[in-house]
Image 1 (cartoon, rainbow, N blue to C red):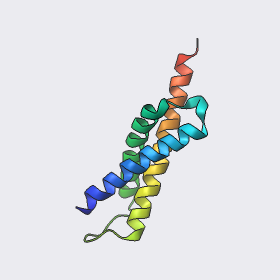
Image 2: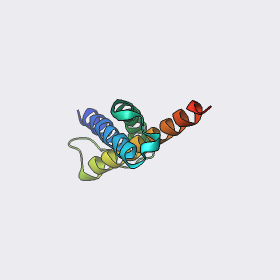
Image 3: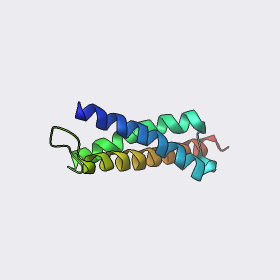
Length: 96
């Protein structure tokens, strides 16, 4: 059950990170739904990448504070990065 909670935490943090990045850089914003979707994808990827590196991995039982913080930070940063990349690509391809 701990793994599912970490993934949900990463996805929600990714959506928040994607929306925050969209507000911080309105020129590459994808809109609320686009920012959220890109953030969710990035949150999942960022959190899983940190897990593969062994950062914030839960050792079983209840989640530790370290694993919760790592999930939130990994999800938020991953969501921001993927949203920024997707927004920049969309902006670059829409120019004529």
